[in-house]
Length: 113
Length: 113
Image (cartoon, rainbow over all chains, first blue to last red; front, side, top):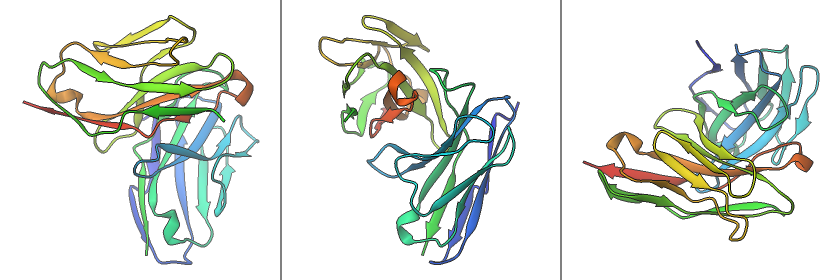
C-alpha cells in the first residue's frame, strides 16, 4: 500500500543545474499538488493539477514547471536551480477538488549551492 | 486575505500532560478547518477536521472545536505520549478558492518521558 511515492529523497544541485522531482500515487486520486516547506512558513503551494490534463499555478510558481503525465504521475521541474529553491518539497494527492483529505509523500530535501 | 495563525513552538511537555495548541484564522465566509500532523521524516497526514461552526473533530485522543465567534480551532489532548512528538499544522479551506488549503506555520511538539 504505497500511497504517494516521491523520488529522490535527497538531492544536492549547483546553481543553474536542472532536475525533475517525480511523484506517483496509487490511490486513483484525481487531484495532485506540489508544495514546498520552509522553516517557520508552513507549506506553500507551487502548482497543482485538479484533474488529469490540467495544471494551475499556486502561490509560488516562479522557477518551476510541472507535468501531469497521467492520472498517477505529477512531476516538478526546476529548469535553473537557485539557492532560494533550497527547501523540502512535498507531493500530495486527494480524491477530488473538495474537502477530502490530502495524502502526502515523504518529501524530497533539496539543497542548491 | 485569508490566513491561519498558530502558536509558536516548540512546545515542550512531560508525558501525560494536557496539551493545547492554539490556532486562529481570518477568513470570509465559512471555511472548513483542519489539523494535520507531521512525524519526523514523514509527510503530513490528516489528524482531524471540522466543516461547520460548533463541529468537533476528534481522532487518536485529539480534539478541536470549530468556534466561529472566536475564529479559533484549538487542538487539545488530555494526556500526551512521547509518540505524539511531531509538528502540527492548522489549515483552512474554502469552496470559493477551489478548496485550496491555507496553512499555518506549524507548531513543533516535544514530549519528554
